[in-house]
Image (cartoon, rainbow, N blue to C red; front, side, top):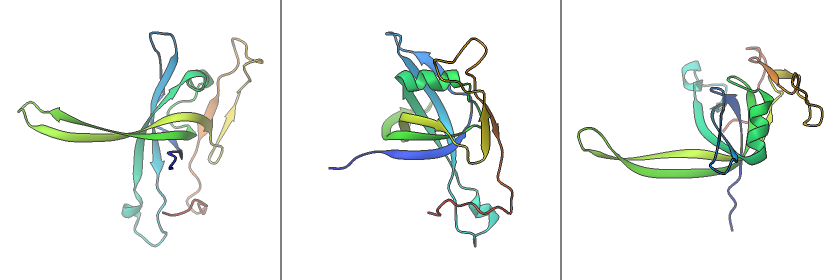
Length: 152
């Protein structure tokens, strides 16, 4: 028996978009950029190895993420299941092309404090009309700081 469960840490590429199903259930969609660390002895050009993952969040986690006020540039940690979709598209000339994408269905999400601070987050019991919005201040680590991420 195998289990499909992954955890991704990366920066939001834009503000996540909250929508609702016909039944009123919240669904949040977004994209995250993930830097894949490389060995230190390779060139700077070869280190440019970002990957982009689309994600979807359902239910209370979607609602809570939307209400937190996080947006583009916020470093997040997303945990969930990967889904690989394939389809055939037809271009204007009638040529068919096989296409595919990998999407993360998020079960749990959080803000990473590795390179940012977040202020102003209140629990749902403490929220008023003026509180509860997170303000993330993303930053990059200093160039001379060693990244403790494992290389792949």
